[in-house]
Image (tube, rainbow, N blue to C red; front, side):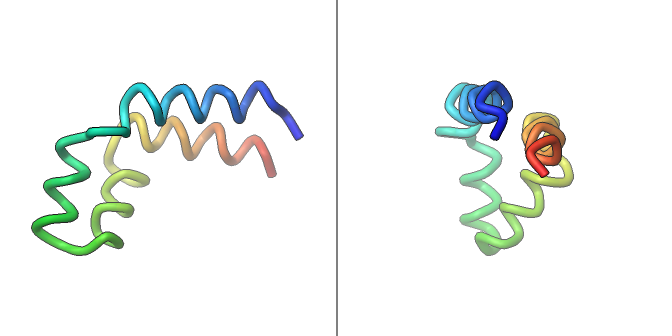
Length: 57
């Protein structure tokens, strides 16, 4: 497994995702699934994390 990719994903998540106001807003106004979909498909950081995650396959 590529630890460099995992490190990059963890760094992005720690730096940008923890305490994200948009994520909390989407959770409070909708569901966890809606917040997750926002993060994966619309957030630039989430898209970057997804791109790095695809490299692990």
